[in-house]
Length: 71
Image 1 (cartoon, one colour):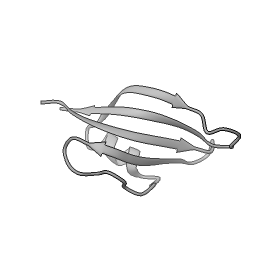
Image 2 (cartoon, one colour):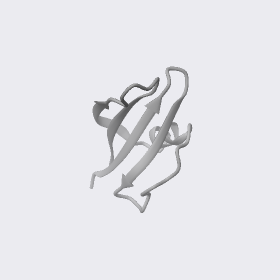
Image 3 (cartoon, one colour):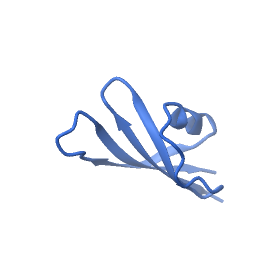
């Protein structure tokens, strides 16, 4: 059975932060922004299946919505 994870990824060009929005394998709503979240998910076997770029207005930050899949 495939599981899905939805995450927001934000970067300033040098550092990348990830916030886990929802994960079908457990309750992850509202996890704090962490630099290691995306790397941890990839190590756990999650793989990106879709990315949607999102703007942040007049900011120096860029973000994307990622859908990851495991299983």
